[in-house]
Image (cartoon, rainbow, N blue to C red; front, top):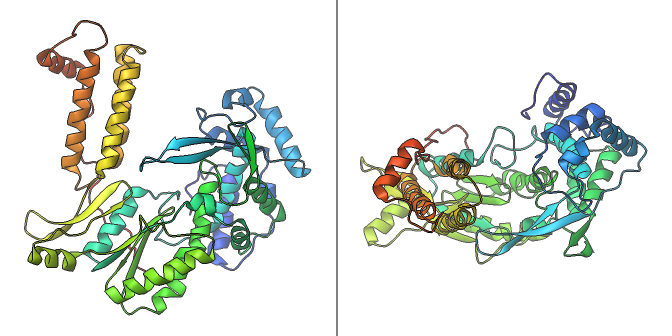
Length: 447
């Protein structure tokens, strides 16, 4: 059930939707648009990121909030009279981990508010339908839960083969007509479906040029995460349970975070069968496997022991920022090891070096120190996961060297030596790299 505050009118109504969805899995919801009233949309406004970039209309969070009650009242009036129009999406490109660029769509603020409201409604319903194998953009679930699920499937599930899968340009190629059909399985409210259709077909403005969006959902849109989860719920999750698992002899384990997923199998025949079926299944819904990034590998205890016997290096795979590999524990048993993906750590350090270089004289020392501490805490909070201690310490060591380097370049003369720097760290310490997330097997990823 969605993680909502129980003491608001909206959350009470959404909890009721969840209850109906849970008890009546075939129900199609007819009356939902009335939930987008002034109180609920006001709540949605306060939940948005106030520092987010403005859309094509240039209206910022603060500017809209100056006359918030009047603006929300006008928005609700336009929604009820069917005069609400989706604004074009401003598209910018941000660097991808592989060195490319990812298109990021920035909706207008009013679109974000209404999308937030609709996303809450969809989440209340579909959280009762979603399976335990998906972890991305869901209440009370995160990437660490997905990592634990992968470990459980390897150590306890007995997998011997693994499908490391990447969908080429998933968010850009999601088929609108299929998505609307999927939504129709649960949603019959024409107003809600019409709103979603407006956002899907909204124009895209990039470098002064406007294009019409025929496929995909904008990365950055408030509504996009729940829509992508609904799409893959039908395309992948249910398909594996209702069809594939009835046709294989062994066990299969799926762990999915948004469009990033791995499938572990206990025998090679099943793994090859799923691999062959998966490509056709994705193609049916307008999606395509990335042949360069997808592969079927031998992985698990048996594969590791065989590689150890032959004296060859066992296979590894990358998932959610970590490189996973089989290793020996201190007691001699087998365990799943993980470390930060090397390229990702190097890119983060390069970015940190560049940021310190730019800000070294732009901020007072204390503000610069606080800024660096926030960056390091954010990094350690995610990558401080069990098994990653050595790589985490390496990152912290290099980050400290960079801090020393750029502090000494805040003026033309050298500021201090290492002894003086260590004294400074005593007064203004940096966060220490440490493991914050331990082994805690809660969710079973088995299908």
